[in-house]
Length: 98
Image (cartoon, rainbow, N blue to C red; front, side, top):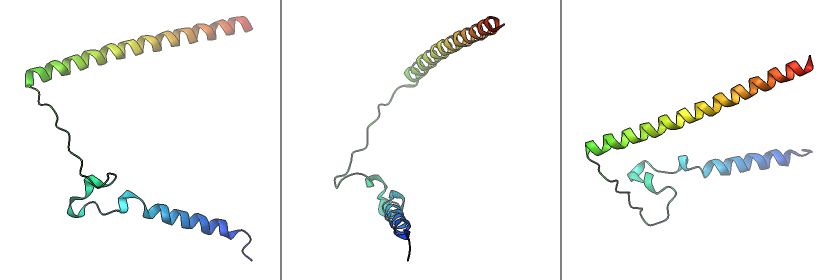
């Protein structure tokens, strides 16, 4: 007379099965199998990244920083406008209620 204990047993079985399928339980550190956890049988090629001279790298970094500063300035302006509009609307509502 379990009265519905089958649901709990089913839940425990599913949790055990899901735990067994986790990639963390698969052998990946032995024999350098870490790369192919989710891949098929064929080996994937590693990407070849371009090498950039130091001068060009500093120019790229400067451009990225300038772009980030512009974006940050724009976000601050929009945020400030929203705050001012919010304050004006709150003051307007308070004046209207009195």
